[in-house]
Image (cartoon, rainbow, N blue to C red; front, side, top):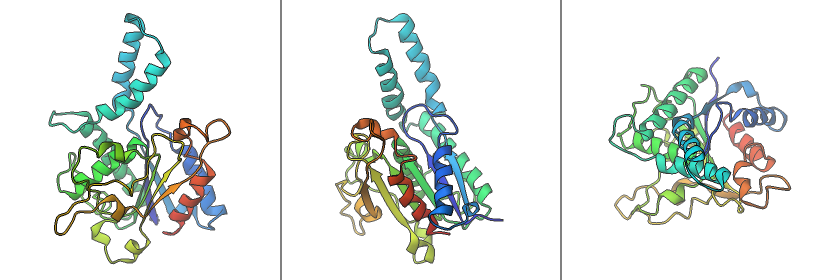
Length: 280
């Protein structure tokens, strides 16, 4: 039986295992049943795992400097290499096999798997994106919408993001990649192909951030809007709300380590489960 919604979950910077989203998915499914009185079997989740594209070269270099150089703060350097190295390594390039294309292949393949699980090309697509994953999925969608994808999607509306009807970004740092752009142009959301439909009427983009998370930012305040006629979409147009929440426990909720604590925090999973339930 076809699912009522497909949800792609993409992680952010750092090294992650392929099962990075499992705990969050389990909690959201439980909330759909217990809090929202919905059937969790109507929902299909798919993790979008990309960190293995960069983790190998990063670890090789870290091992090399440990063995062959006089450096201090090795653990901190490991964090910097694996976190900031992700952002610097993800650059659009014309070089064959570049990292940008390899990561977009990971996104394309995961969405293709999700479409197979959903079993319906017209089902709504929801994206949940943490941290740098928000920038990556935004680029992937933007390239598709501009008719210039780096990798070709499957030949159906779902994989072409024509049914994109829900967005959740959390700990998102898209603003850090916009300062050289003038104007700053956002993706079309919801997808223009569902404009005027009941699906579009349900569409929301909520951006969650913890004020103590120095890697998570509001999106609606991103500046330099397009002044063309008609103007292209900006973030104030397409993001419904920036939601400040408090994530993490006693040790992490009040400091920058909150960046990794969204996934199973009640302040995050409760409203997200409600957003999913709106499509069931």
